[in-house]
Image (cartoon, rainbow, N blue to C red; front, side, top):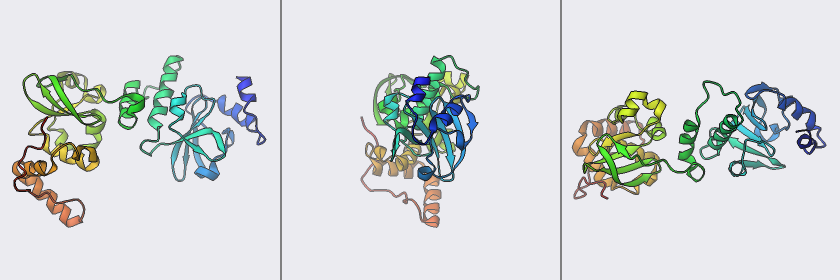
Length: 289
């Protein structure tokens, strides 16, 4: 420990500040003077700071919230460090914007928690589990966490084949010859509207234990998948590239005329979004294996 700190002595005299900061308990608030670095010129005035794990700091400034990771942080792997942004003049620091998609902050959350578990350190009761951390990380960093698993079981039998429309969004066929849409928890929970979520089916296990605890999939029958697919296509262009959008719009017009009327009225009134219109001869078969 002392040798590591001695190697970090610099002309600015940061050793004393780092010693003070590392004596703090993880997640304990610290003052700006106790930080072993000064990045206020680059990130703005620090309004609040916490030591999340040795060498890992949470900073809140007027403009953003970030993780700052030092080179010696024992919980953070080289792979995790590679996601961070290097500040000019601070080659030993990596910065992860909390609210910037793809910044790597989910990787840092995961590695901090894994370090605490491996080292038998106390974890707050409200702390997310490794499962939660990995599930939210899979969406932004499948290269680190892997992709969302394809569900083997559905409310209508076992999956016999599938096609990925998106990482975590799968079109399935079951052993009962039924087709359906499966959407992983982080995506359906945030990107599908509440009324459409209610049209999804849950596995019995998720119903029994609570889907917000199990982080289970929602399954939509082919009929009930039409509007969820439409909603997701606005957020994920990849989906629009794997289904026949003209046929999907035709299916909405044929099956959900009230939805079309409300959508088009709002789109015209607020001048945002595209009108849902029928395309002659496009049919309604929006997806085919």
